[in-house]
Length: 130
Image (cartoon, rainbow, N blue to C red):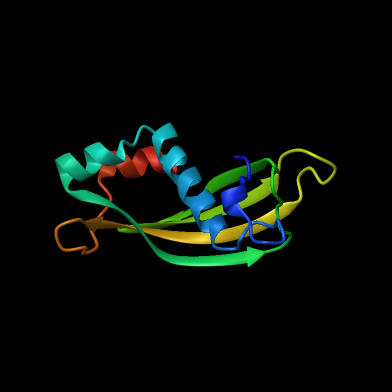
């Protein structure tokens, strides 16, 4: 993803909270790539995912117009949640591959009606664990 003017502070560096947005978008695409339709999951099964915990290290600020590669990797799956490792790295320019931010994200499966933890459906758990 490209860093736009709206993403940066007055110094032209990505505002730290925007890495959470980048990580969220990458997780949504990661789920989609595993055949998970989040709208259908909510409408049919009444469940969805929420971020229960986020641990982020900010290493090197990305700047206006930088191209970032944001990755997602499953590191642990439990009955009602899973842990992911995510990284935002520079994808072009002289500092290609430099890590801008790295995170460990815990995503929990919850019922929408009461936001209580819900076991991951077996078929979904198998898809995202692959």
